[in-house]
Image (cartoon, rainbow, N blue to C red; front, top):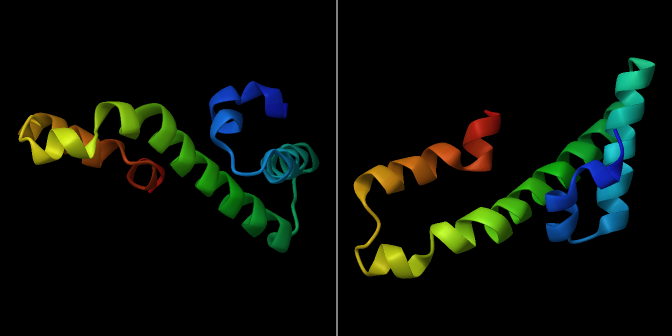
Length: 92
């Protein structure tokens, strides 16, 4: 696993340095079979933020805009899909 394997996360990352470091922590943890809890929690926080930013940049802002909600163009089915696809819901 290499940071360049995640172009959408990297394109939306607030800090490439933190994202890359988080990916290395996860990759090394998988390879070693263990990771320090402090490092794991920091990596999870960083990756969670990166996923939220990528979702917003690549999906939500393009397909689920406030304009569609306000104008009533968002169908009930599309609203349900939006809530089911939220990254926090998918990971739960």
